[in-house]
Amino acid sequence: MPTVLQECVFDKEFQRSPLVYQFSSLGSLDEKWMAELAASLSSGYSEDKTPLGLGESSIIWPTVEDVRCSLEGYGAGSAIPSPLKNVEKGFLRKYWAKWKASHTGRCRAMPHIKTFTRYKGQQLAWFLLTSANLSKSAWGALQKNNSQLMIRSYELGVVFLPSHIKEDSHEFSCTTNGGSSKGIVQSNTTGKSIATKTKLVTLAWQGSKTSEVITLPVPYELPPERYSSEDVPWSWDRRYTKKDVYGHVWPRL
Image (cartoon, rainbow, N blue to C red; front, side, top):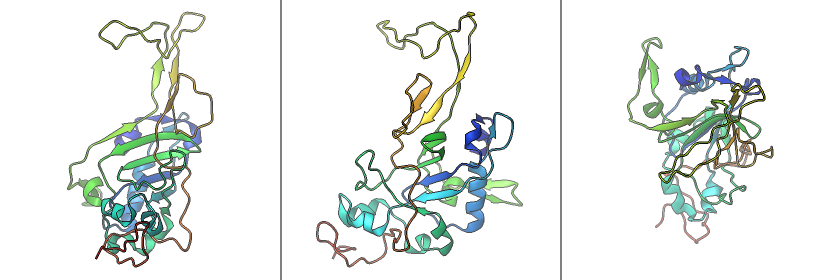
């Protein structure tokens, strides 16, 4: 990710903008590794060649109450398989943020998707959809005085980035029957092409929907709401005696 992001130019508004990690399984992590990940995902430069700088990180993770009241009750927790020993590390408390998706009506649908993003308001610097959970095995760990990155798992992801588009007035076709679709670019009055930049936004973005705006269906609300002092992160190997929406306890007897 740093290699990809360092080759990109982002709007100045993303300087020191926040990061979000959302996934379905949490590995055994430590503060040093979390700092290294944040530094990596904070890579990139603004248009004046200034580094974007370190962004504050949040982990979107369902609470016990979220799972208990979900569409599947405690059973949904089987798809969020993280043990207590990984989830209840004290240093993680500052990262926890709630799973909320009222804009898509999916607050009670527990997530199994894995996404990582950097945002400002409802605009996205970049968005990563991946198979990688938050673990050293999936993302790798620096070794030998940071000269080596050890990755144990094979993962696959797609990173969405803003891109420059060369403008011209030609139409194009991507169908076999020759049907055409108007290009998203146009020439200026001098006849010269103009380079414009796409803008990545969430479904909740309220700006004008021009041809340069690309809406990504980010499955959670931004900015994420931090845990309250009463919220407890879900772990699947813990006993829960308060009955869920189907009258079950966890684990099921």
